[in-house]
Image 1 (cartoon, rainbow, N blue to C red):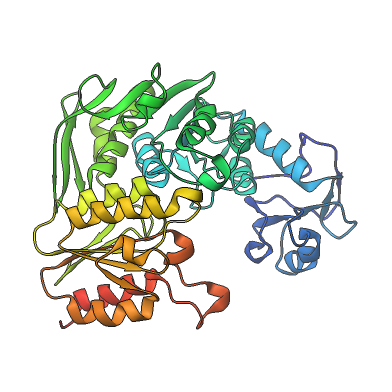
Image 2: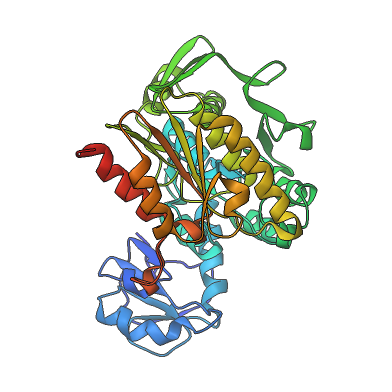
Length: 427
């Protein structure tokens, strides 16, 4: 419990009616009798505007500079939150930070399973991580924190907050180039997570960090999985002689599982037990989720970059049947975005039997090009048949229907939903 009347790592005036909370949130809609609210400054408005709503929802206390009921009054809520997060994190014996252009969430899921760790939910902003650390930092279970960046200097800020004992870079590729400038800039910024701590990097990222231990498959890998076999049913390999089975997984998931086992070995855990836990991992929706049925739908639509789409297309190529790719625009690629879309589209044509593209750069991405998702849907739903395997992937700004514009925008999440209905119903 987070007790505002206990010793705090910052100076505060605590209202006598303030109560302990299970966790903190910066989103007033999540406030409840167990969840306290932190009134953070925002780009468009200040969290102080929502303090009364949080109190009305029963928040045990609010971290704010306002003089209100159940207030924990501080000069700056953001600074107080981060100080609290650092203090709680310092109590934890093992914190793993994971970053990468591709596979952060997947790696996080497998690492947490192998370590039996608390792990960050989908959101990985600084305030979200701070709230996570305040809640779980004092636990005797390890923590696994996803650390995504999209601007120069952000990783240094994240590292200062999380202070990981182990830093992981899953991959380095063309992502957020508008802010980071180049793939070399991506590698440099992400590499900040490796400074001064035990570092682990995936085999794809290894050339960027030549003196850091590696995990994955292949010759010369420090923590190596062996005898890898990937089929439509899943992935099988061995690690230190321990057999590992991952249902409905691709090579990317298998590499994440090797990372988890490397971390478990380093923590002195039982490898067979860790391997058994890996078989139960289910990654969040939109991140290479295979939905079998009359046709197979691969939902990888949460986000996309050239490296991520290429990996997904390689996984698609392992399936029997007619393989169909449905690709949308990849965002934040800077001046070379048309060239990068064309390269991905060329790879799609090599890996899939039928290729679709939608939106800007549709013709680069697919043989069948459509301006809008509804136009694409008309053709796609008329085309698919039993036994087909359909991969859907794009950046999430394209993939997901904007909640605040319901009825106006239609994203590739709708394509996934309708294909899944077709897969489980009559063709």
